[in-house]
Length: 166
Image 1 (cartoon, rainbow, N blue to C red):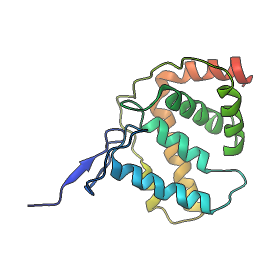
Image 2 (tube, one colour):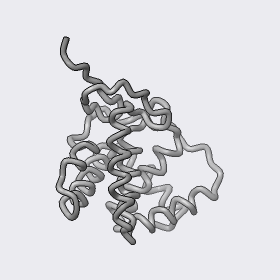
Image 3 (cartoon, helix red, strand yellow):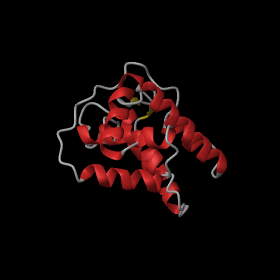
Image 4 (cartoon, rainbow, N blue to C red):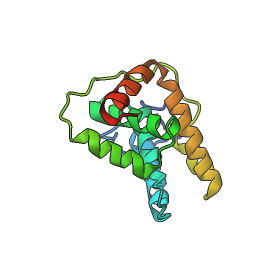
């Protein structure tokens, strides 16, 4: 009997099964979520003043939409990716924008995830050499995820223009 493989429902990453429970927050396998936790620990250990970890939060959230993922998680992830990638916001600035948006009570729409699979995942980021190369891979992953959501660009831009003047 060979090793069991589990496929993440969000990013379709295939990993050896560790018999982990699926995420209760993201449309993700427990094995994929564990990798995200490793990236989070790495990012947080850097004490980065620009808080690049926010880009990882938003890339992972957008790539793992659907299923149990809350509507606000997907909406904020897409807004964060837009602000970072298209407007040049730092992670700290994206966090502040999220705080401004959170003050407005709203029923966030349910967005179904894109049909196309991204070419990069959290696994690719972790495989990159720590430091500048990993940061560059994190940015490439975020751009790949953002590109997969092209069908929602107008909604994101409208929300950011109306509520954040961006």
